[in-house]
Image 1: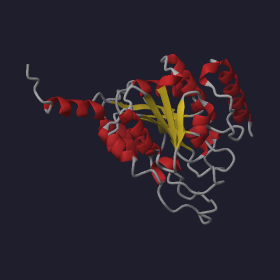
Image 2 (image 1 turned 60 degrees about the vertical axis):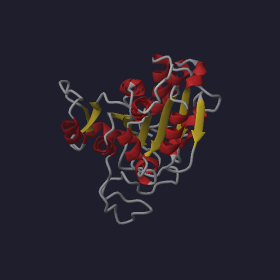
Image 3 (image 1 turned 45 degrees about the horizontal axis):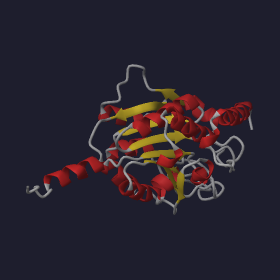
Image 4 (image 1 turned 45 degrees about the vertical axis):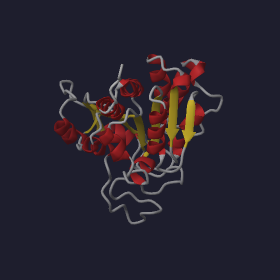
Length: 286
């Protein structure tokens, strides 16, 4: 572990201790020391506090993967679902009780691999859900296989001669599907991570926060140092209102832009349901 990674771990634990205990379960995170997932977990704690979201009003749904253990580490209602099925489970929770703050957390395999068929429909319908997609470009839980977001040429146990498939881009996918809030952040940037997660939860509609979260144990090419060298904040004068421009910037690889690509006000799925009900309500006869 290099100095940057050690500092990252120490800062994560110090910030976690400073956060009010009511957001923590007794179970401590079990990720590898230096894992990129520590920061978004802490950012979620802090975003809940910043926006006064109570544990009794909060539901966290996860799939399978290293990020799937998030519900074990945070106070609130949680469900660790089947591989790739976090989105439909969360959709059901929101339909059953629209007053709940429902957050989905999953990795690149869970979100754009086996769960990739659910992602577009939640986005296009504009369900009021927040999706934290933690992208480490590898299957970390099963010790290092190529994932749908792995870079071309990456050598792994399932691509011994190098990955020959182009990687998927979760931010671009969300924009294409019609999501109304799309952001990307490097997991090392805790303040930005906290802000974007909080803004995503406040947004009414489908929100994606695409977190670039390195796996230090099994990914030897996508590292903290390599990502730090590749990322740059969106230009200061950028306005997140143009979907076409957002698509162009989300696809850039030199640099890889981070920040809020798009924020669009549009009726959520349940808003549209309410409108349909209103149109077809039987008239009240006095």
